[in-house]
Length: 214
Image (cartoon, rainbow, N blue to C red):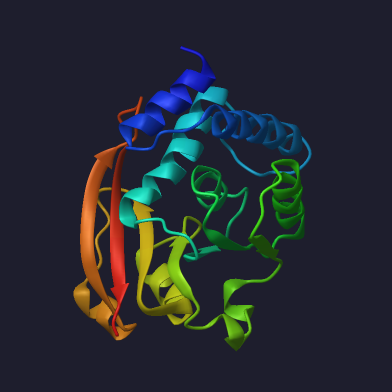
């Protein structure tokens, strides 16, 4: 199976139909990621197939947590090499995306990939999430994060940026849980948890969706 087929068939299993142009963008992303990874440490995953499954398809699985729509604003905290924000943006170019990444070299890569893929309405902010100005508070419909050690930390940091009625979407290992009290303390409620396996792999994931109270 080619990498392209691995990607498109895997996306289809997640309910996402990628066009030829979108599949092309992912293949360019893969090449650029590997090129930059030789110079700076963007990802420990270096095998092509693993990148497609554990980065690209894993990122697309976040779309199980919300319904994309024009004018919807998404904030990705600690974007790293662009996961999950860039794959989500490729699949749904109508979304407005802000990627926060405090490591300058990683932020430089993010700007490079945005330019290379000619993505629009997507911004890279070279800051820690907790350094974002108040103008970002209560601004976003969806907040995502992959870089946090646990859900409690991600929720605590991300909750202020959500609009009332907004969603925080986290993909975690199946064994991780969080108590409802910790979520309520941040003004959120547990909307649902979806258990799935990444396509073309036995890797289990739990997609957690948290709703910001009105």
